Amino acid sequence: MRSRCWSDRACEVTIRPSTAGRGGDERQRGAVVTVLVAGIGNMLMSDDGFGVEVIKALTAPDAPELPADVEVVDIGIRGMHLAYQLLDGYDGLLLVDATERGGTPGELYLLEHDISGSGQPDEDESPVGVPDAHGMTPDAVLALLASLATASGLAPTAGLRRVLVLGCEPTSVEDGMGLSEPVAAAVPKAVQAVHKVLAEHLIADVESSATSTTSGR
Image (cartoon, rainbow, N blue to C red; front, top):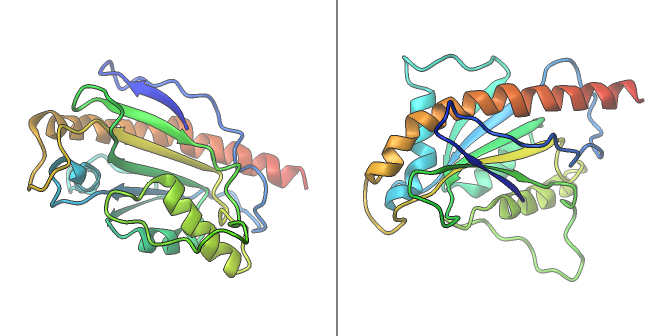
């Protein structure tokens, strides 16, 4: 997974356009690109509830309007629910979650998950289980998605072209209610970051990818 640190300076981020997951989509695509923004986390484990709080802020009545082709959902700890929802067919996925990477609490990261290797599990592998509360990594979710998609006769990624993670360094993910002060302060910054990532790294890139795929047929 490629990583870039999100700075406090105007939510700047640099990430290379992805070439992952460009093939394998058998669905006919139109001009509309759909992106799912999913908040992940357990509200009963202090800073692990970061993703859920960001989704609340994104959908607040006074929040900036999101593009019409973006769907926002509070997944919480329902990994199976997320995998099933992805079967509906989205071009891009942005996961928002607490992410421990050894940085300063409240620091934001933009990570890209390489989905080029996502595929059907090997025959000798055990069945994919349901991701648990904080084991719901992109790998776990996409492995579950691959199992469900292939069982339904779909491509393993169910049409996903890009998967990004907006993560926040937690202070603690121990039992407890409420975010720590540094992580709570990062929520408004994360809302700005979501809008920037959607505009510059998800919608534009998957739109370009879909156009290239369609024109190449």
